[in-house]
Amino acid sequence: MKEKQELLMIPGPIEFSPAVLNAMSRPTNSHVSPEFVACFGRCLERLGDLFLAPKYQSFILAGSGTLAMDVALSNLLEPDDGVLIVHSGYFSDRMRDIAELYGARVDVVSAETGSVPGPEDVQKALEKKDYKIVCITHVDTSTSVLADIKGISAVARKADALVVVDGVAAAGGAECRTEEWGIDIYLTASQKAVGVPPGLALLTVSPRALKVAAERTNPVPNYYASFTYWLPIMEAYQARKPAYFGTPAVNLVYALEVSLKEILEDEGLEERFIRHEKQGQAFRAGLRALGMQPLPAGEELCAPTLTAVYYPEGVSAALNAALAEEGVLVAGGLLPAIKGDYFRIGHMGYSGLLDLMGVLGGLERALIKCGYDAFSPGAALQACQKEYLALRGDV
Ligand SMILES: *Cc1c(COP(=O)(O)O)cnc(C)c1O
Image (tube, rainbow, N blue to C red):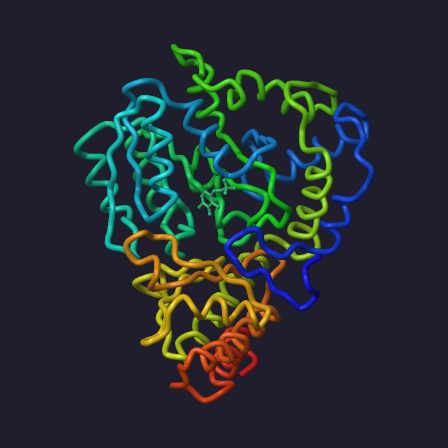
């Protein structure tokens, strides 16, 4: 068992609410029982609320976020289709690898580390060539850079390209208005800001994208990921009818319903977007008070759901171990070129200001243990507190 006073502050899996964890331990019933079919149907509908895409089709599949990426591209792509990858880090490379595997002609538009191409950069690329799909990572997990998916979707739509957004480190924390912004597929996984243990791939798909998939010339070159098999299943569950293609992750779906209730009813989606914004901003103020610099090249590029931050002068990855001794678990660097220069803290879903104040306190103690003491103890907590109170309008 995990020690009670340990905080899992990596960019997923995250800390989960007791009610969500409790739902996991209920007796598993048949995937075609009326009770489960109704629960699955409600989850599909509520995902439409989570993604702000009421007219789209949601999919819930047993698998991880990578499966959701695979589902999106394998169903839309045919050999020699053009794909433009808007590159912001590690998972953009994964999207490119998947597109290449399905025989697409892939181009990449990239930016300096700590940044991401904007709508103008994408517009320029779209003027030079025709692309069937533009792929964007909403929040890049390796850099904590937030992309302007609204602006990029608008230019992609104008060029008649389908827009696929990897929202794995964003959905349920960072603002996304999928339908209004014209995104065709927005995808995520359960273990990040959606707040359910690992094992569910979640997607929402526009009618336009479903039509493209339905009118393909070649069959989908992926058996498990194919809409051909899964679309009728999702439609059946939504009509509260039992259906089978592959056994759903029954207990995870029960847990998903609990988490969606917490997000949409208990907290409220708009309030949740604002909470993530504020807690991220306050947390970064705390880091800066310690002389630590976030990796994103500007405040407007900082994700609300996680922070990648450089080690201060003279401190190395030994800090992560010292932090673990303080009960705070963080993730190391992920970009090969600067892997040893920075680390990452997740602050999404169930994790809130309470946890982040704990992280900053632990970070101060760990830094002192590592020989870095260019701050007065409590400085990070004070800066975080001040920023948060100011954001809330209390001072
Ligand atoms: C975590 C993550 C993935 C991969 O998800 P898995 O569940 O590990 O397969 C993909 N994209 C982004 C942006 C992520 O944060």
